[in-house]
Picture 1 (spheres, rainbow, N blue to C red):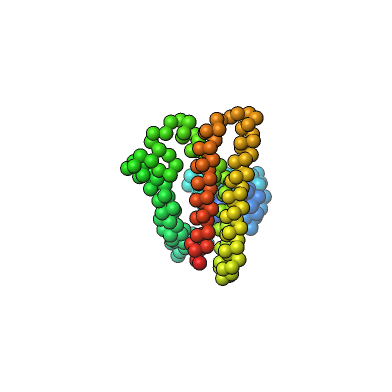
Picture 2 (spheres, helix red, strand yellow):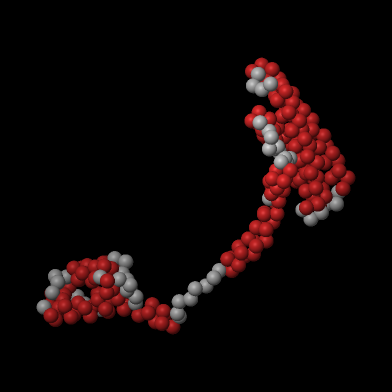
Length: 240
């Protein structure tokens, strides 16, 4: 019995040296057979009936035993001994860090108008969007006006930025001016069309008093025109 245990221990080490951690008992059986061991030898030398039973036992030992949990074959151990593990930082990390350093301050700078609005409210009591003495109705009118102004002119601002930039980059200043003038006029016309539609709908369902609507329209018009007028400056910011 002691001889069987010693032989099995030697066999486990031999299998581990050759294949490392096995993927199945069939691989172990093939490895055992490669050592020249036959079914007729297993009973006398290892105390099991055949190679498959022996392979099942060796496989369980190599995959579940704490002693052999991290089984490596001879070549794997040699590689680890001659090539110590190193931690390599990817160049992509440096690229991401550079992008972050470049655009994060720029993003903070784009929030500067918001910070200025907050500072204006604190110092003066009013800003472009609000006043500290507004009541709920006035605040609602201002917010609706801002929303209508942004939504109504947002598409034109985008088109001005893209199309005017295209002509500007190709040094076609005549088409740049024509495009901007046309879209500015069309954007302002669209604002008035939106106002007319809102007035028409409100005349039937009476959502808001007309006095409130005129405040909404005033804010929407001023905000919309402001965005349209600032949109042509996009080509200058894109390398113009």
